[in-house]
Amino acid sequence: MSGMTDFANPAVYIVEGLLVFFILWKILSARRGRELFIRRIPGLSVLDEAVGRATEMGRPMVYAPGLSGLDIVGLQSMSIMSHIIRRAANYSTRVIVPLADPVLYTVAEEVARDAYTTEGVPEQFIPEDIRYLTNEQFAWASGVVGILHREKIATAFYFGAYAAEALILAENGQIAGAIQVAGTPSITQIPFFLAACDYTIIGDEYYAASAYLSREPTLLGSLVGQDYSKLLMVGLVLIGVLGVTLAAIEPHFPGLANINELFNKYFLQYFPGSA
Amino acid sequence: MGYLPDFPMALLPVSVHGKMLAVYIFGALMAGAAGLVALMAVPPRYRKIVVVGVTFFGGLYFSLEFLLPHQPVAHIPGSAGVARFANSLTRAKPNIADWAMVIASFTLLLGTFNLFAIHSRAVKKKTEGWYNSLAFFITFFLILIVGILKDSPVSKLGPGAAKGLQSVCTSLYGILFDGFVQNLDATMFSLIAFYIVSAAYRAFRVRSAEAGLMMGTAGIIMLGLVPVGAWLTNWLPSTGLLASLRLENITYWLLTWPNMAAQRAIEFGLAIGAVAMSLRIWLSLERGSFFDRQL
Image (tube, rainbow over all chains, first blue to last red; front, side):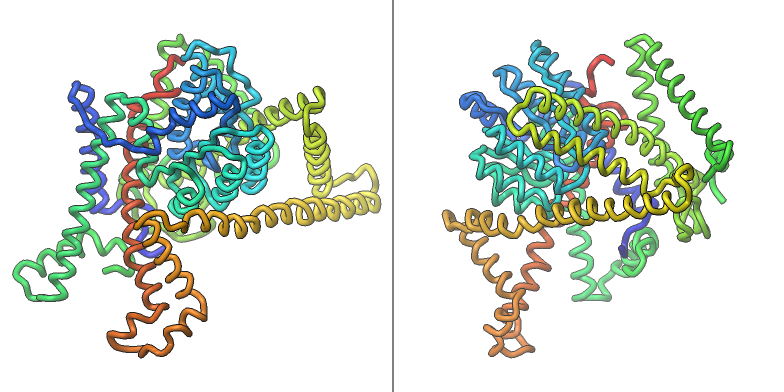
């Protein structure tokens, strides 16, 4: 793919350095006790309501982490799962977790056990409810569909990495009459979840979930740091747009040639085909 | 070549054969067992320090490998002969990545145990649909045995019988894998076509201005991507200002500009979120679920 390298260039040092600085700075200020505000995210606010619905109906819930493995996406999914299981444990509602990755399965089992223990009801933990199905994409999807129908699921959560199976699950969840909440960093699947689920969290809201749900200062600080980082990226995009527009309208604008040379020297030469 | 001394590759050979392979496997198992025993022997309050240290140094290795200056090299072990850029740390990358694969193989065994526990209970208690669990056991062992036999030399049976058995197993494997697994996979995949229709029906019900806008845009794009769409606005000139109103050009514009802008905005957010989470995990700042529990 043009424009991608497997090593850092000076631009990466600067941008990555600033991102890390903003995130760590806000984490430290949050840890020092500074009050931080984060906006309401409907898809996450509704999680407790979704658990309540399953409790009222006396039916189990499904938490599907998709095809996630033990990576950033999978770990974030485990954080959200932990919150949901803890809420469910308060109401003695079953949560079935079908997994497609054996490594994540071992982590999920520990997280679930830990969540029940934290809530003081370790006896509610059923090891068979944390199920490794298969690592084959569509075999896993058919397994989850089977669970949705056989167990008469009241609430389904889809948080993790998803591919083509996203719509299969969400549509079957609809057929089963489940309330469905989804969140995925897989951009191509977001429209399917939006069309078929009751609530969908979009984009980086997925990574905001643990901070939003726990209100833990470190995580809140990190979230605010992310917002500062986004502002930085927006600023860089605006500078780029202005520069390119100016170069097209008035190529001999004073100083423009120097800026162009600077960009070429420290940035564009590392991206084949763009200089 | 590098800014750092070369990674001690003698400890991480690209490949070993014969007796040395057995020595390496035995050594790895012993080292793994010793590491596990040592970790269990560490008092609980210090275990976290060990985990934090391992996480930090693991992250540090990959960070430094990416951040330290690279130089062009002709060949890197494990990179299938592709010329790339590398530094002193790059050479060890495939071997270190292999460790993750080894750990994953152990967990696959745990996953299989989980499957056995769930399905054996279903068969034993004859719960609803228990025959599906029985089907799991039959297919599991069938494909396991056939898969092993089709590739292993069975010299005790004699060359003719061994060849015959392998031939039968290869055919059976073909039936099981290409005939069943692949086709069942394709069946599940093809169901998406039907689900897209039902999902689209719900999504395109015009209940608000936004839904109406989405419906209109979707209609234009669907028409613009099929020949009939181009035919509908064929009467417009193919050059000049009015050409922009041809359905295929509106479709191209919608996909390339507003749609791409929105996608890139989401991608930026996601990438920054991933950086923040990676940083928290690397520096052991992550909180919640299993991250701040007593080990």
